[in-house]
Length: 273
Length: 306
Image 1 (tube, each protein chain N blue to C red):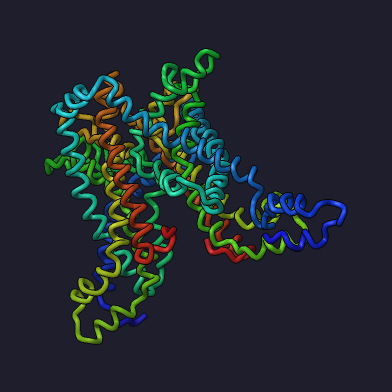
Image 2 (image 1 turned 120 degrees about the horizontal axis):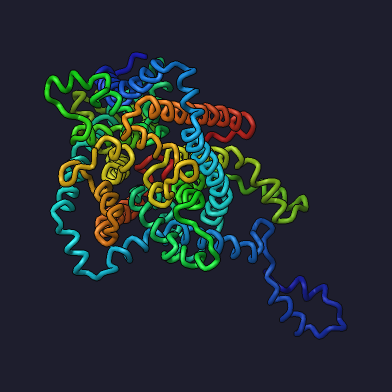
């Protein structure tokens, strides 16, 4: 514990002071507000039809988008790690676009693209298929924001996978596809699940990129974060608090699950990630 | 792949010249390489998916911004409220980023250079803002400082406005960006250990001098990496800021909020004009980030090396 390096007290003090003032105290205000309602009060509000519908929309579509991202994220990571082709670096950099592009910008761009008169929307309009202003539009926005999480968690693990095990599989007579499915993918499972969970968690809380394309019709295409904003505008602080607390609890449970997953994968595969 | 062994076992009935040609056109694929069909199909799937979902929206921003020509673009840019929004966004970033640098360095210093009880809890708490929805981040400040909030009446008594004013926007931005620099510096400084600092101290340098002359040069590229991401998020944050801002034109509208206001008024060209500036910021951020990952790979945190 004794160290010759100075500055521990100052650094820790500064860290705790800022963390408390900016993050912990405001979050405590939320918990305090919720404790006034009590557990039953929060549960009753969360089960209110409009709030329940919004929570269902947010959680359900986030899960769907996260699963799709799981599939295409793994393919993208595989392509980036295993193949050499012109434009690979560009593709690699493009993966981070959703992290860098402000959500409101992504939101209006997606809405313009998938609206009935947009580039993509107009392709579907003749068949009476609406994408923007329906739950499908929300799903598309959530795929956009969630993709980098899967790619960026799977990519480093895949890059470190040992070449010897595939060689061994090949020597033992496994075909290439079989080697990929039975030998290479199983150790990636924890990383894939982590990426999918992060994509899911991000989707549940996402606001900016969704609200422009969603249409925001109560009971149909209204997401939980938007309903918080609506409740605040109506000065219904209790309702807003109940939705926020439900979302926070869910993301806390996801974090717990992720930690459990991490320690399980370390025991199972010895992969630190 | 030499063809000589094949020729040696070739049956004598077939003219050997034909066989040589046939054998040389067959390229044997190593057992750990994917079949070409699989390879090209997967590359095509990845490229198409990314093009459709990620690149197309980016292209759309610029096309929509210039839909009515360059002149309309310039007019939208010179709009009074647009200029005010740009100024406010720069101001907010100019406050949030330095706070982040101080927090990030302080947090990384105590976590990476020292052992103390509760360290892993502190690391989790630092990451907390990333797992909170931006809207909830805004909400907590409304619950704390709003008119009906816990500290609202006190604030009002002193005449300090936080919600629907610039301080609220700054606080919400700091909340959502807080982990960026710390997350980048903690693994980097843990990797570097304390030997350099110990050497400097044993040679008689003071604590501050050691930090400025030894630690800072060691972490400068990692710090820049964190600042880059932090700045992009600070300038582009929407959800948290939207809740606390009140959307007062020319006063509390940051660039993303101005985009929303204009878009909801069906003023698409003006909305996409401001959006194009933010998209440009994103592109510059990505380019610099890629440059850091490529050029200074050894001097940023290991997880970002390619």
